[in-house]
Image 1 (cartoon, rainbow, N blue to C red):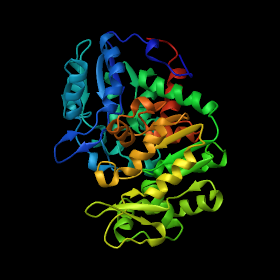
Image 2 (image 1 turned 135 degrees about the vertical axis):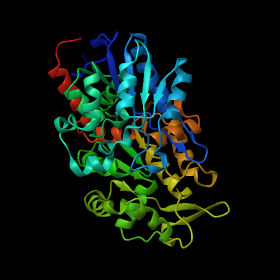
Image 3 (image 1 turned 120 degrees about the vertical axis):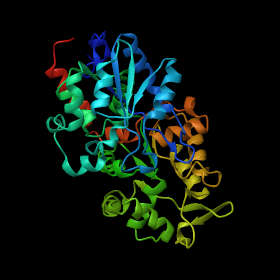
Length: 419
């Protein structure tokens, strides 16, 4: 047992139905019906292989997209094909989550066989809105439909979804209430690395935050700023745009419409509070870029944009941020600086991350889109550590005990007898 949590070494899996919650959530191209990046699936392979090799009747659960990233919301059937290819072994798939067909398939598993259930987010109780509105206790989540249907069929539960460890959802915290539970190899590695980093980060510590999923950043920023865990925070992406709106700077209707369509306007008041309390520690872009038959840059002082949406930071901001990063001993990165998938608007992400990759600072980067960008620029070997979970990493850095970590600790204490 490590960190008061069971590991894979603490149980005998031979012949045992083992529910394994993974985070296989991947960028998805809806037009081509393909997964654009499989880094998270690849990271899950060691745990899956070990459990199967040890004779588990292995049932895999994962989400793919959801109410906060509906563009990635799709069945996990594609993931079963990728898993089969990576493992060199068939991974069965069933287009059911916890209904009669899924339960029957689980009951018919033989030792070493692997079954992937369909996207758990097809269950309303697994959606973020369900989590945010109801705020159920772990005990209450153990009584939800998906847990109450699947737990009686299982002997053990393994969570290898560190990327989702900040989520408080039934398949992440409910099974631990009913089954002896352990963390998988990826979870063990990522939790251990971040724990060691946070015990004594090199100073100054610079956070570079961006991307489109910004809600976790607002949970984390007050803590890391007030405790000096972060000496400075450099903002990019939609996160930076929300802060500019908080300062009363008009971005232009196209950019503003994107923020309101994603319901990110609810963070404007929080941004105002952070700027009021930590203005000198929060660095905002001085210019942006947009695509108009090629890359075009505009100073913040020349906003709003009339006919285009902001889609990257500008060259002046890149230079400013590189100067800030030059003195850093620790750098945490979460979220791309712009729309890095397109040639016109990838400069901010490409330049800043290439700069960090050459830095002597201890650099940690996390999140699905962040990993996709790292792989695009072939920088994976140049970062000190790559964490599959952006949101979990950000929440962990706030000093908050992650819901899944808490649930796994409670399970280890509750089920002290090893199988």
